[in-house]
Length: 362
Image (cartoon, rainbow, N blue to C red; front, side, top):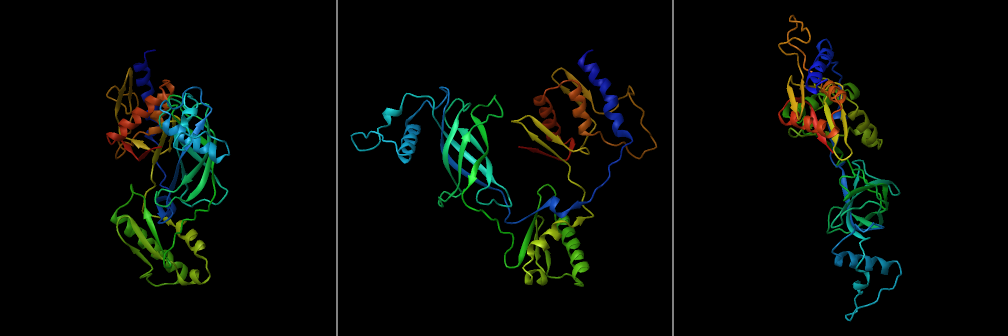
C-alpha cells in the first residue's frame, strides 16, 4: 500500500482517539515549576589523554606529546631530555594511538558528596575517533579558571553512544568526586524561588506569593503573612523562613513542606524531551498539537479529519479537541519512520508554533 494513502488512513485512528477524550487538569506542586536559588547545576572540566586508539588519535602530536611526557614523568617514567633540558617529545611522536581530549561532568543542583561517581563526557580535540580508547586519570576543575581546585578525578573506558559521531563519548560513573560540593539554599534566613523560564510571568509570581501566604496562615496562624513572602519580579519569589523553623534548626523540613505545596491556578507544564545523540524521544500523554498536514519526504499525514470525512465530529461540542502528539508519533511508528525523521518533524512543528508544550533537546 502506498505510504501516503496508508498515512491518510491512519488519520482516522490518529484523530478518533482524541475526539471524546478530555484532559484531567492535575495540580502542579511548587517543586514542579520552581527551583531554589543557589541550587544550580555546575560543570567540572579538564584536559585529559585518551590511549588505546586504533590509529585514530591526534595527527598533530606536539601538544599531545608534551601532555603525555608530563603524565609519564608524574607516573615515574624517565623521559630523555633535549639540549635545553626539557623532555624530548620527539621520542613520543609517530603514534596515532593517543589523543588530547576535553572532559566535562555535571554536578547536580543538589550538589555531590565526596566519593560520588558522576558520568562524564569526553570530546576529541584533534582525533578522528575515540572508539576503543581509555581516558587516563584527569584532574577535574571548577568553571572558574582563576580557582584551579581539583574537585574530582575522571578515568575509564570510553563508550560511544552515537557511532556516527565517534569523536564524542561518555564514561558512565567515570568521574569520582574528591571534594564535597554543597549548594546552599538560604541566605540570612531567607530563600529565593526561581520560576521556570517557560512559566515565568508577573501573574505567576504574584499567584505563588499569594498561595504561600495562605499556606503560612493555615500552618502558623499568621493573619496576613506580610513580610514573609515577596514576589521580587516575574522570575523570583523571596520567602523568609518562619522563626520556629529557624529556632529548631529545621529549615529542611520547611523547604520540604513549601516545595510540596499544590498550585491551584497554574496548569501543568507539558513537555517533550529529545536526545538526538541516542535517538530517544520522551513525551507526555497530554501534549497537544494543532491540526496540521505533514508532508515529509514521501510521507503525508493529516493530523485532523479533512473534507472527505474519515471520522465524524460532534458539532454540538463547543470546539473540537486538538490532536495529541503521541498519536502522531504512533502513526509515524506504524509507517516505520526513522527516529531522525520523527525528530525533524517535531522540531518543525515546534518552530511553527504547532506544539502546545515545551520541547527540550539534550
